[in-house]
Image 1 (cartoon, rainbow, N blue to C red):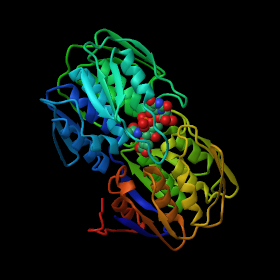
Image 2 (cartoon, rainbow, N blue to C red):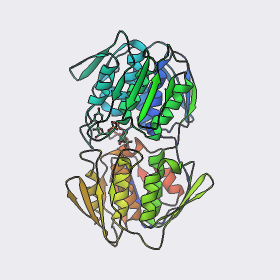
Image 3 (cartoon, protein in one colour):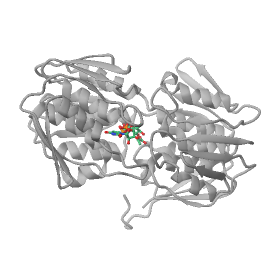
Image 4 (cartoon, rainbow, N blue to C red):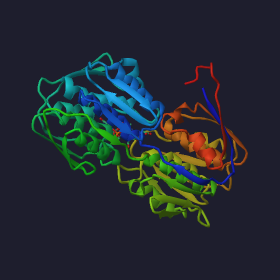
Length: 425
Ligand code: EPZ
């Protein structure tokens, strides 16, 4: 398993180009199952999650080629049963269910397990499929869905923590080939949902309202192949902006979409960080002081849960007290204990973390636990004095393309130690 060794205290400086969005590409890859014609997706980040999804599509019978950031997918003949081991291992694969149900009228998919950040139920996905006329059966760790006919319906997809992103994606995709009109109420509004709808409409779907809480889909008989360029990754952009702030450096983000992470930019400005748009680029530089801020994670367009850990790492260095409340997932503070190893002062009170800024962090060994928590550890290591070692960085490789090369390009003293032969992922 690879690890990172970071010699911190170096302000990041220079330019970084933001990659395509993982959370847009994964459902768009699944959407290619809706047609037997070839689909091409551009600006695809080379991530282990993307390669994993490619293997899942291949296990379903699709042909997938991935080179130079371009994915070519053709699902000429497919079968509806994904490889249990593959589907169980990556939650995002649940979004193959909607396309398979729409294309084949029946499918059997492994129920995705929980993960480090929570139970991750799929009850809302199943509610949506039932609303469209599917019969569901859960047995042996699988969910089987069958629908001789998919009939458009109105379905409310809001759950205890608000909308569901992949649930919205799944029902929207299934509805593209249903008979009649489907209305999704309390739909997720994330930019990735709008990007998926854009791709589906390029395939001949008739979707309106994506990006708003009410999405309308008028079913069509069939969809054709399409080409699409994915939106930039707003979470990666936010992560680099926070890393610049944490190291007191000045960086330019190329290919970022500031309109996709306004809540993060607002909080960075409140914390005293300067964020300026220079044409299509975004320049992030430190202000005279770093100030503590309070954050509550919310569904889009509120502060994203996927940036909560990274912001906590920054607040460890803001003199005063910051309160960070996680409202989307039930256990997304694992990074707090790891940050404490660098000298951070964090106490957990139910859904909130109370962060008291310290004058400096000092390097230590840490263990990555989940994708975004790992990014927080990297940020802390970059800001800390001395050497930091982060184990199990495969978590990071799931969602950040070449993050070590990008950080070195910004002046970070970071190296990846590959320990091949030790079951390295
Ligand atoms: C997507 O996961 C993202 N993943 C997650 O990013 C992100 O954290 C999450 O949305 C929230 O923004 C991808 O897009 C691949 P949800 P998803 O369904 O769709 C509850 C990352 O780091 N819920 O929006 O699986 C659920 O438990 C990953 O890139 C139900 O109760 O998340 C959670 O509390 C991590 N029933 C809340 O809704 C359901 O049927 C939001 O979950 C589904 C979800």
